[in-house]
Image: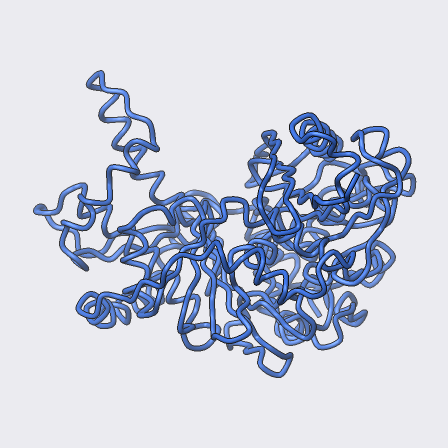
Length: 533
């Protein structure tokens, strides 16, 4: 039978999916399972590594039950997953302890001290990526201090997709998009050993697996994995890029003819633009954002990320649901969200400013501050729920503009994806806040599609990535939506106030953190400063 399908595995924070695509990019089957993590006292977030692999394997078995003759039709599997975090295994390949995922903020104090030291800036200039508490470097330092038993067992440090790739192939590897942004030099696309010395991790150099570019090299499914997932031993397995890059690829970030960006409006907000060479990468003074290898030779995705995007909408919607429930009315979050558009668009534009820093982990783009919190500015007694909601939507638009400004000018066209991209009001406000054209991707599973695209190119199923984009991506892009000129003008006038307010806020955030009792983070910060390079 013809090998006419490619599978993308996407292990996100909340869901793990295995999805089958034709060689033209049409989705023909999906199997998904919840991804589970546990919150830990002290801002921790941990994941059971063995359970995560078991769930991923179950999605592949389920996909085989969904798609007729999958085992004889699948030509390759590409793997992507949630980024950052630290997934440690021992010499036998067993978990050394629970994984610390990207939501784990226990290394915030460690990270603040690193960022304030000369080593923090040198790390940024080498990797093109600002240090954050969710990254492997600060998390390894935190583990050394607080979990020496785990570190004593550790033989290899993975990210999640590296762990799944290892379980599928038996190969210990890191892909360039995460290996390099953690400890490397984006100009050489390899590790920079001096960085580990600068971070105080020189003795842990042996934890880092080789960097393997999946866009040009595939592994093979091991006998053990084949027995567990029900697919053939020796099947090509491709280590894809971090899920953000995979999603950007599947949603249209790369266009050979246009200056394009991509905004993912999900639980978190991701804002990306393409740099077509290492020389085109822009490094800001604040040492924030990421520079990630993109699966087109010589190309990079520059990224700024808000910790919370639609989480802000969810918060306000849930407040309304709670009030309705007290009066015996039940409404789902989705029902309320889908009903918001007309109400939001009728509310006065720019009546209130909102900073969307609702995450307990603070903010990481375009600035890093674990103490950052959300705020409304300009409230008066005349404002209604709809005014508040419009301010939240506008806050997401201004946050996106803030992020793009840190990477240079706003691209001439931004492709939008994520669940909230269905909202007409959100698209209209985002386009006006950015002052640029908006095109919506109709691809629902852009991350899995991106992983499958890399697998298709890596194994020669399509000749190159530009051909793959023409087949898989271009047909999924909606018509360009020009920004509303009057609304864009109003937002241009408001944006400096948005920036000025967030620049003035840190002393307030610090005072509130101290009042809540932020001693652990300060103790970590103080102790690290004593030994910082």
